[in-house]
Image (cartoon, rainbow, N blue to C red):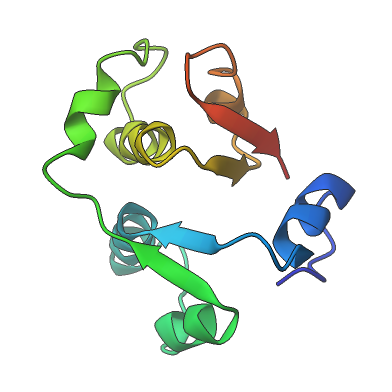
Length: 116
């Protein structure tokens, strides 16, 4: 994962730091699965296994996460993005993303975003 050619040096450093835990949101898995079902992308059958092999832990979206959406302005209404940002705030994590819309939320209190 850290050797992906589109990954920034900053993101690579965060991923390779053994003191950091790496997570993937259950919302990301859900969104990717829906896109695959709609023919917008192809997912390998082993996506979950590959994620675990890369030491990614799965972060479930639970009943406490929606409360953290309140401070996120409605710059766009993608529920998956908003949920992932809420998880990032709640769990005090850094969100690595190439999504320019999410990167425009860089001034939201408690939201730590890095462009990958």
